[in-house]
Length: 207
Image (tube, rainbow, N blue to C red; front, side, top):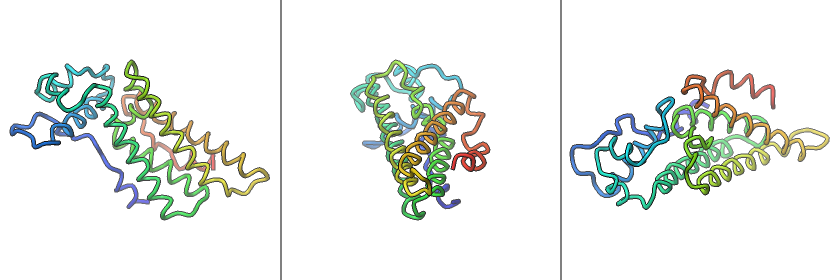
């Protein structure tokens, strides 16, 4: 488990501040995304505007739009990172652990640990950072959780029960709701109530 946790990537750069030298092609785009993620990590942060983002980086708003066609595209860059990270973490578990409650439990644990290491991304995952943004962004997040729930159903479909398929669907739905609740509490507590708090005990009650 420890080696899996170590591979949970952190996206936002603690030092995502203006670089003194001219960035190479692609570096400015990454810097914009890292700075946006870092701004989302600030407890109680208001809606991030392109003006505040540009000021944080030390460039003009026009400079941002040379790398991204719109603000929505910037958020899509963050969602891409979340999606790739989630799929990668799930693959780590399914490659190493046979299907069953333990596999499902480890998937939930790793995804919550990922959000804990990337507070800004947790705000993206619950849609908090996407309020008043383009609706397709929330649709992508909904699709991400649909993927997670589908994998959890797959992990649990062999559980011993009189109705294994129905029970797998029920438990998978419960686990996703639990994850979303933990992420909401994390963001709305100013990132003080960690998603991993008493996690194993909580999962043991559900699985």
